[in-house]
Length: 234
Image (tube, rainbow, N blue to C red; front, side):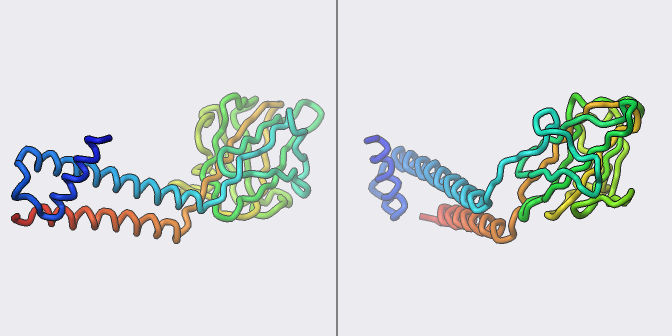
């Protein structure tokens, strides 16, 4: 601690232009300490700004629906099961298909909260298939009327562990914005088990991004001024 105080005092003397009476060896030591101190201060400032930006976004824990724990999902597109979802991976897991007594379709509706978007839809390990493909469809709103859906995908064993959103929506890194959606899950053959992770992530707010960008720009502008000052002849 005492050495640190002495180095700090030496750095202050150098920053005031008191070079003539300080030996070269001590001068180099003080300048090195100043560089280290300045870098630590800059990174602490960046970390502090990042914490402020993240703290400004309220977080809600991920939830979901697991039929073995929460009960059977609705078989009616006009009255789907209401599922609460939050930030993170919201697991939807159950069984579907035709056990010989009729087709068991699963319908659920959920809301993507303001400030978030659905950024991926992962087929979980353990998902099984009785035929070649399974069906999943998604529609805007809180119901599915008839066979009307916004998008759908037929997927097989090769999709386990992958993101289905590009297949559903097309494009590069597709997302679903905040709003209400209804999902239709169905196996085209016999009964199977399935699992999906509906992953919700925060949408960066323009004001938060501007705050972070301004702070970082100010820090690096300070670094450039310090570098130019150090290059001036003494």
